[in-house]
Image (cartoon, rainbow, N blue to C red):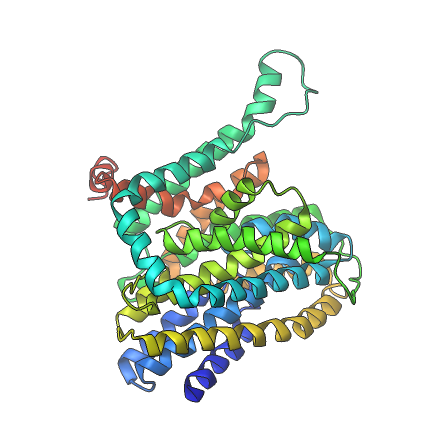
Length: 436
């Protein structure tokens, strides 16, 4: 047990370093570690599993820092950016980080509470829901698109102009979803990423869809960041923390259990279900959703009688190790709890350091430096083909930024191909597109 905890702590400490690099996803780093572990056998599989669990837990906490301060979120964190940006411009960026961390700590508590019943609850749920996953996924897609309600200010002249003012964001959301879905088909069937780097296949797409457009917007907008206030307390009651945590945990668990659904989408659904309208609730719930999505998704791999592979980390780990017993499961739960507590208390001083630094450096320079880092990461990990994918994805990702629709629609890159494949129509669509 002690050895497992030490490896989890080591993974958490490593994640504290790479999670601060914008758009460098934990799965990308894990892919490299898994490749080394498979070829050189320097780490036993059971120890590697605890190390990766610590990495995922730490990433779920620490990546909130670049998401809020540098505006380069991943696909599970896009919803925390807008409220986080509001806090940042109000000199409260550090407070937003703390609220996110508190939500994440609440997510850890929820996962620990569910641990004693997980081996009975989740296998039963899987048996009930497995035959219905395809239409549930299509229902999620329909809700996501239909909830992109027409927007308008009623300032345009009456007639076609006013109609277009209200419906242009909805049209932009549909176009974004379809174009990103088309990109997803290309990545699934004819990717430009070399076969030797196939484990990084989605990296350039996610960087282009979610990170680069926002950085371009920052460069054009000439944002000036005020000096950040390092608050000693947070503006949130116990009731607010509990409500935000429970809503986020519901969304994160939904996303962890269902294929392709990410923490951001799960958080959106849970937010609608619990009628969230408060920015504090929003940020707290997204912190909880993020942790239960990433960490809970991997923890399902350890549940006895379930052995569910949801998320990239579980898929990678399943290729090297499958010895899931009650003992290893409770080891994983203990490792997750220790890594989560450590991550929260490391998050606070790291966020303070970044808060002090961000106000001393011009935001355009930060955005430009972040953009350069992203392009270097994409080029280094996926080559020239990855840069071309990133460029195409950036064009798609700019649509919601310019037309005011949800950036969540970019998740069509995964949702549309997988939903069609689950319905048995994926190969047919790929044939129509000339990809076979």
